[in-house]
Picture 1 (cartoon, rainbow, N blue to C red):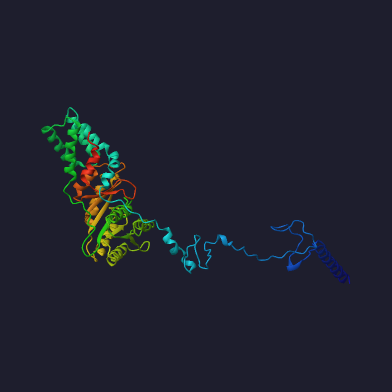
Picture 2 (tube, rainbow, N blue to C red):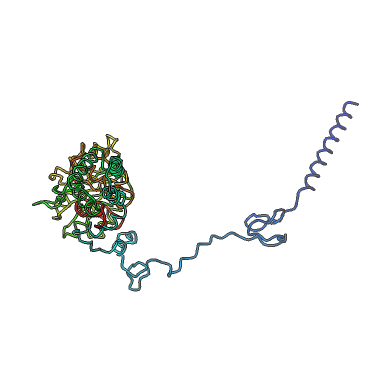
Length: 423
């Protein structure tokens, strides 16, 4: 009996405890007013876009999708008053909206220019060349017109020639010839020294060498391949050579076979458009030999006089790249022989340019050299050194950054610029 009473008491206590807990939870539970869409408006902090202190009985706000306003018609690049799509300048671009770039291309092309005639360019640029070559010409004249040509003076003459990048062998011959002439004829005045020095420099530069560009051959376009190391200005030189040829009345096709430099083809095409020359280009990173082949084919089909092929810059120490150059020449040769292989050299690199030139000569058999940047810190003696070491004539020289600052090399005008005006 006592056990039954104990069980009843325990059950009552448990039930009472449970009722107390449930009641407390109900009393602590906050009242919520639920509005439309099931969103509660109380017990929340104001969010972005919400009003602070929303009354409990206020209706909740719904969220609507709102589209962006349409662009005003004035901002559209294709406003047409006649119903046809046009650019902002009112130029029709055709019915397809996705073909805007080709339609705008004629507007973006530079105007066709008339290049300066090739004849006499070096004479016109003579003053510019003379300003940068005083160390050679004026220095030698000062030494040779002195009262006493002793051994120390001749050593100074030799040093001046070496500093001017004439080269060791050419310097020895030039000094020996000058010594002999001063013993026989003397050089007591600056005028006499100038005549003597002019004759000997011309003998070293060479006046009988054929420096003409083979850019016109019967029954087919002449093919000119332009090669060189990185940074010598090959693409710019191609553009300037094109201007030279157009100034002589030739029709030119340019081949952008430098497919590894992103801007090379664009740069060459701009040069071509300025003088009305066609540019053949391929995909970026494509086969350069294929582009060169297509350029020559285009020249044959169009009856052009000359095809100029720009190649990628390559270090003379990279065998694989030199082999690629051999391939370009071989593939182009399927249309016919390559008539000119011009090596572009930066004259400011001095004797290092000779090392580069030797390797290119072995790879593709050079026919001529283009010396650029002779108006800067270059020494005029590099002309003598290049020709003597390679047996390849300098055919063109660059004397500035202007589009017509590339000139056919003329030995007499060049030497006269080195020596300055007669005293």
